[in-house]
Image 1: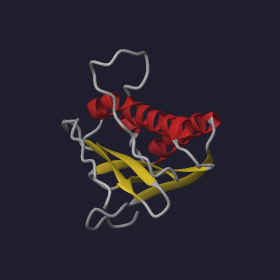
Image 2: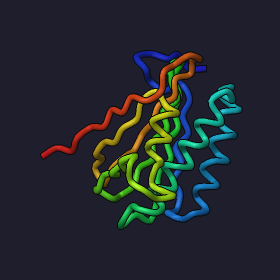
Image 3: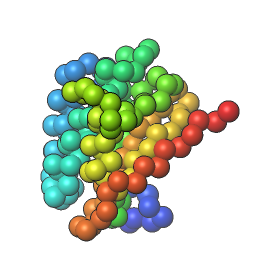
Image 4: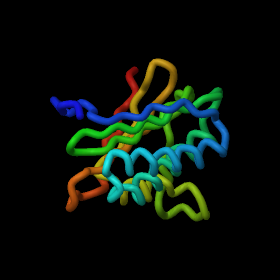
Length: 149
């Protein structure tokens, strides 16, 4: 096992997936497998929901994207889930008073994770979420970076 210094990952999985609905199932499965291997099964339910929601959003909404990256990495303190696509348009979380049966994924994510946000990348954007590995953490701290310019 590698030493964990300065919050650097001590475990990491990086997958490039096609921008298709099948990738959501693949991402959920990979998340279950690696969390078990990393002895983080206690995070599985929430992590799989977050992966599913973020991958679904990328598949449905990311324009000009033929591949999506799923990046899972863990330190001794947190598990970070990050989805990258080539669409430069940032997600717009829905307001709770709007009616509809879908579009409330970020409300769910905010309830499940310690913090989440969006960052600009060289080729598009990355949406990320972090789950605290230690029990008793408080979810719901959005940390959305703002685009430059």
